[in-house]
Length: 167
Image (tube, rainbow, N blue to C red; front, side):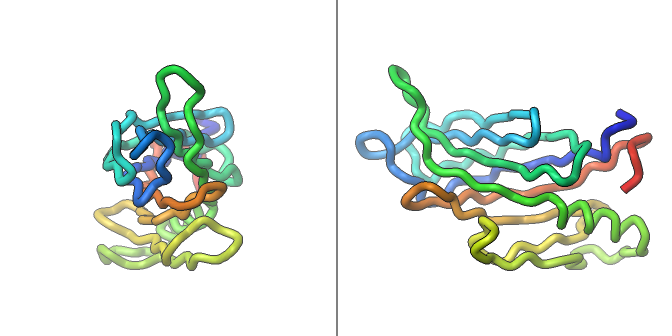
């Protein structure tokens, strides 16, 4: 634990207008990777607007590693089909956590920073990092790349580990 900065809880909320990979629909699931860590959601059958509402937790040792999301269509008799990918930089949320440690931010709902969508990131709309109930939280809509359409809505939440490296 001494090499860990903390934990990052990723709530994969839902997919929006995902690509069709089967006859009329898809059976999507999300794979989340950061460094050597790999986690995945359950499969939602026959739905291009799936609701996962699943929490996946990553250990953060190196804040420079991005989170990579890949959406797949589950197939029974062949390889799972790719349904797009996205990447999210965790440096802004790490910076926000550092800021709350050194500045007294007692007000719930305070926006610590805003991330605007641009050609270099996967955000489909403005994403705010806020201070809520003593935690640093980021809500985001990510536009999937390498596919004809689709977005994933998620929430990042930083979890401080007692005894971990200070940020």
